[in-house]
Image (cartoon, rainbow over all chains, first blue to last red; front, side, top):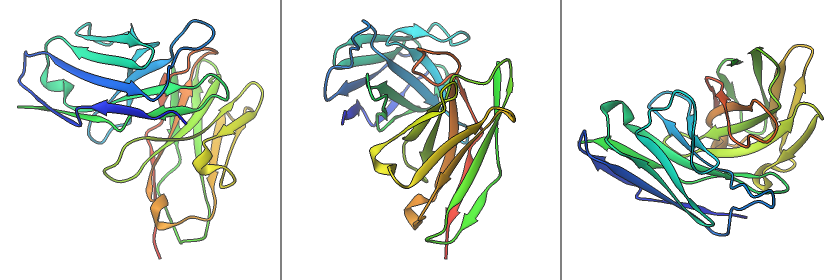
Amino acid sequence: EIVMTQTPHSLPVTVGQPASISCRSSQSLAHSDGNTYLSWLQQRPGQPPRVLIYKTSNRVSGVPDRFSGSGAGTDFTLEISRVDPEDAGIYYCMQVTQFPHVYTFGQGTKLEIK
Amino acid sequence: QVQLVQSGAEVKKPGSSVKVSCKASGDTFPYAISWVRQAPGQGLEWMGRLISVFGLPNYAQNFQGRVTITADKSTSTAYMELYSLTFEDTAVYYCAAEKDYGHFYFDFWGQGTLVTVSS
């Protein structure tokens, strides 16, 4: 079973400053098709999660370009270039194993505005 | 676009079961639907997934033998039934859809269904 570890658990950020969240997996997430199915989700209070980034670095349509994803193998990062007040919430990374397709979430990182 | 609308909140007794529905509306029925739960103040936990085209489910190891995920394409509705409930099953249960083959991420989410297990 793949374990996803996110750091930090809590991230206080001033508006306009950058933010970075790390996600590390217990084994490589690369699939034999050449893709790495690592996604990032945002959950605002009282709402269901929504996807921001898929396949490590692809931003979903409508997501502000201040969000970016990077990484490979076992180490992945979500970066926010300039934090906006609406970015407050909990961020999760999620991976999918090749077969059987098992989905695993990181434990979450709470981003709060200072 | 796909909208997922889930059934309402449930209160159940320990040892009983609960069945939550998730009705999809929009372009086409999603390629796959997963169920994800979130205990109060906790993170997200994947329970299982159903590929709607084939009707083949796969479940997280933690839920094997205790959950059944089905879909009725004629009504565009997916279901998650969880058995032998304990207090630890109190959570918000979400359905989450993958629009197309090969996405392996959740394009759409239901609004969530609170299941409370209480004696």
